[in-house]
Length: 184
Image (cartoon, rainbow, N blue to C red):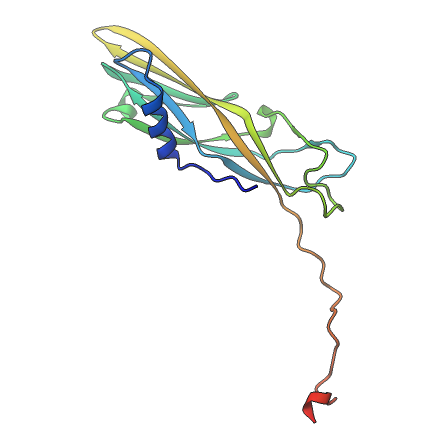
């Protein structure tokens, strides 16, 4: 079963149209496309898949009734904060967060990416593996308000197997000095 990714802009637009903000004068919505990462095959005796640093692309749509003072996007302990100057006149912000493996849980699967087992699964979709959070601080008339959003992120693990060893040539070796029946 092949899964198709939804373009991030369409996902964000759908989220804005479907989910009416609780406060009508300001809101924040965070979205991300499915993230794909390659992992090396593991021994059959190991049940956990070691993950590399993973880059998640995030987009946040923001709307304040006053001025956007700051926006923080985070995954686990990795975050990026945009200040009022960076947000001035912006309705959306995009960024990439590189999350190191020590901040992520290890993925467990008995059938995924096992070395010396060509029948093991080469792709694994892990929905809701981590969550992206957004916090938006708005200011108006000397008062600050905070708005929060979160979104579960999908991770697709792809097994990166080494190329098959084709050192043994299965074709019949014929030297140019020999004639074949077709040459006659």
